[in-house]
Image (cartoon, rainbow, N blue to C red; front, side, top):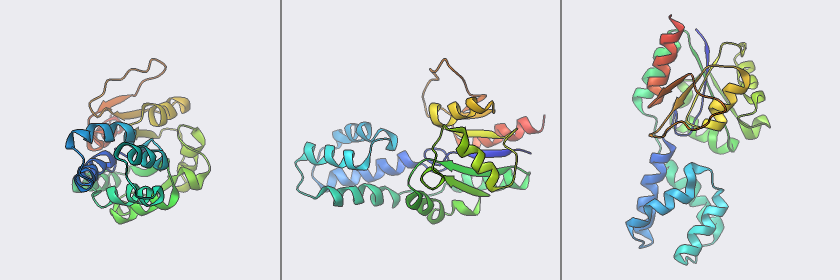
Length: 217
């Protein structure tokens, strides 16, 4: 059974769902229209927008007097209160591990924040280890971060699977290494002509099932 290198945001943890729940409450708190939810989700860009830039956009749009540093802290901490590990995802990871798969989280981001998310949701109990870009000194899709993940669990990178929702960071990284991959489409169509995922699924549970099925062929 193979090594499985799995993304964190919107793969193992529903980062977008947690941000949406926080955003609804935040808009209520500042007296903004709920119609602005789409705008807030758009400028957040699935967490790709810098928290400082997002804080400035929010302050300017709503003419808030709150200091940027306080709003940045709220943008970090607020969504985390809504973030939980889906018990079915934990169950799928446990089944995969029992079957011999070795799941390792590979994520871009700040070490302290990503560490906290993995531990406080209990995800740490279901994965063999994790590698975070800030601590590793290299980010996805650079193959080095995936190689570091394999080293952490003393396994060869050859034959590993990469699972994630990012076409560039996850599937592009897998393609650069010649590894099979599973893309979580999240309602999107695949549009990149440079490479393509081995499997396309709706969620990480289906992705783990696809890898187990392939490994048993």
